[in-house]
Length: 484
View 1 (cartoon, rainbow, N blue to C red):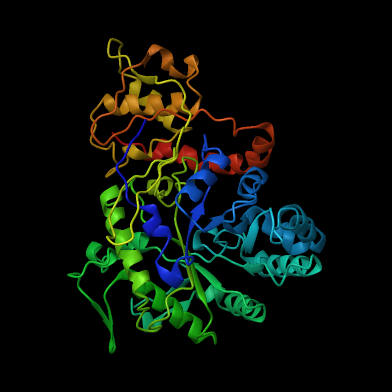
View 2: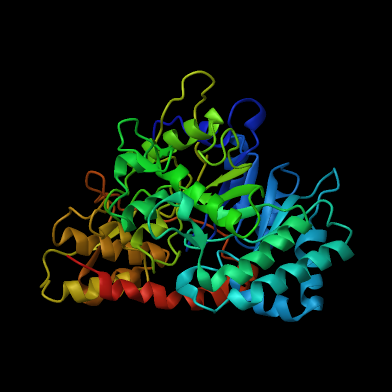
């Protein structure tokens, strides 16, 4: 339905030689119509992906991963940290239900390598919402793993956000942890060192480029002609090294200069903002993988690159929070339906990327605006539609930002229509909507048809219901940000 010529993921996720297992991928499930877990596991296996990082412990996902031989990082959502901090029994129950039950002892089961406590719980925008509970939760999960005789095989980690460490001058040598986190970071790193765990962190060249006028696009994309940044006698040729060494300096300042680093999240979005395109993402990915494959490391850690790197992300997710930007729903190397967005060729050893096969869609129908009606109130209807569906491609710089009125109205109507499983009443809009079998997609602006999926089972709905409630505020932000 959405074919692309591709040469991508094997190169992104499988480096040559001894580093072949050092690249993994984040698999998030914040989607209204997620690709069924067995299909996603097929996608991972067909592209020889060896490691995957999850943001929760969805039983349907773990069942699909069982026996796959894919190495897994399990996630604990931030919403559980307070309970796990205060209750050792709750931690033991979580480990029993999500680790012991699925753990592979050399046979069938899930190859669980890490338990990630929280999802960037120190993000500055969260304030103290999760911060006070992280260390206690991590300690209780560690104790529960020890009680289950799994502490020697499963490591506890805490994924830290890109804004955990800073350098006001922009020089890596001046890097330090945020002052509000200094005590907590010492506690965390003491815990990690004691249990021989790694420091998990997000590196985000895209957000650094957005927020820092001194970071150029070429510098972010590993371009050879990019203007270099100097720090005393050290020269920085790309944004990744600059951020990475800022972290290394921060770690050194509190007494942990040698701790292993895992880049838990890194990528480049393809929609929802200026410079978030498939072609730019392709350039970034190629530069990143070339850099990691070279094993040159960084000026502060020469020939010592991160021990593992997890690409963010496998698939687009239309229910991700857009608080930090509409691009948040477009990090996927694959579209929501498992089709590659871009390709590049590393030359020797490259193979074709395998798209998801035999994907089941809803009927080839779309909802568009009826041009024979009075459209004076159409914009208000579109705003309503976008408050509960994904219209981020209409953002300035987005793939659909250039379609004119009333084409953007049609895009909003169709997003709502697909979100609601193509129910006839979801294309009403007070008589302004019209169902058509003619694809209204224009140039790069794709009017999608949603997946036909049975993944929204009662068990899964019960699992994600609290998270949907938390997302409603973010979805309604579209009302304020919608522009024509």
